[in-house]
Image 1 (cartoon, helix red, strand yellow):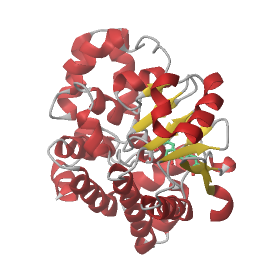
Image 2 (tube, helix red, strand yellow):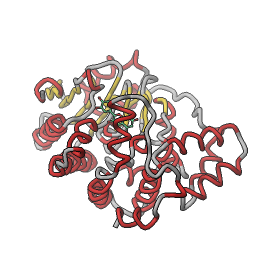
Image 3 (spheres, protein in one colour):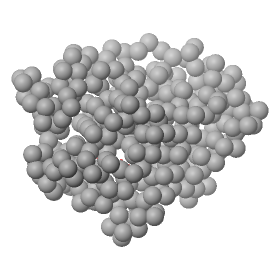
Length: 334
Ligand code: QUE
């Protein structure tokens, strides 16, 4: 229910949105998306609201993604209008956050994946604790990094965004700041004081609460990430990883080859295209791509394997990168 899954209240100088859908780790359903958008609209011209804070009521997650389980049911039932309404409304919210005229501050103290990144990364401030866990894991479910990821991933340093978007690699809170997904590091123990200070002082409270950032645990791999993931095709990325000859490269290649081969191809093409698009154009292109991707066999199968049955044994068709029809992928992105 909307009323209980998203609470929008005033707290001193801020408007506060609190996600509370514990059984789904705050995965966003359509009513939640609409409730967040409505709160932003209501506070936009409210002079008493200096900034908006989005937070979670549950310890494990900020937001685990979109309610992809419902989208799969709609896809299997041929209910394309419902799918269009879900992604269209979600992407509109992503743009609304990016264009919001007041500071939009996300407090991330747990899982933040897919749609969770979409309701945080476009905001001006993304605070993470040591419990932040960030990823764009869509290639594992036969989807693609959406919610504006085709815009923001190619803007991360080097080939980091392509690496994150294709492999679904998870980043800790500190690593997410290094990678550019988050902006401030505030340990969990210091979050209650930050929440109180935000209510009392507004967004100006942020800098004083940020703490020293731990080192980037991926630092040693950044040169290899840039060497391997800057390539134009999956075949080249695969060859680059093999040529590295390191344990890291072998593990990364194994991760990549477990993903939907078709999803890797349309995801790489969408990320490369997004490098030259503005956010609105990228979101429009993402919405068009969802119309094709949600009808692909790998989409229903990926969600079945990873979210519904949780056997983690998806049967991709085709099963290898070499069998993916380049013309079919190109047509999906047209
Ligand atoms: C890859 C994904 C998602 C995922 C698992 C993956 C994703 C997503 C969810 C999810 C999580 C909890 C829920 C829910 C969906 O899981 O995008 O309904 O309760 O939203 O391996 O991309």
